[in-house]
Image (cartoon, rainbow, N blue to C red):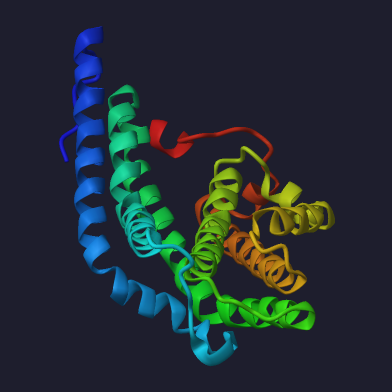
Length: 260
């Protein structure tokens, strides 16, 4: 998509902002309508890993408008997730003209990496986190009362879990840039691992919507694995660019290689 010039009058900037907001809104509305009609298929897909833990495998809607509101809610949230790369790009494209050429070249790879990590996180959650999480949750319900599986509640919780894991999978990207550009030295990340593990445990407790110990422990395990993987890749990149001395660097050197 085209990027506007760096210097424009205020009214032109406002016009550019309106144009990009219009693109986002129109695209989101179009995808919401498409996903509204595709909602039954999406519902089947989302409920597939949950059904084994629901009594009789049946879901219920408790109001006359429930069918419409559930389909629209699922359609909108699915459209929002599908359009998220485009939305992020429109936001960044509005600010890109203010960046230097050596800074711009980092934007597209970052958006691509962030998008891939987000969707990998959602897919990972769907296959490996949702089944044990709902097995524990439904078990807790059945221990005190009869389970009445409301479709919007179950799918809403599942989608929050998937989005939470999608966001959590951005951790390697954050750690990578902080360490590679020496905003936070690699040595500091490595030496402060105990503190960081505690922080990750708190983050896992905060971003899991169901607040179950099973999900929080799984989230914590994933965050620690991603953190260590990010440091492994970061170490390789730093040594390749700067040698082993770069692992001890403590200066901020954003885009240093590009300015030489």
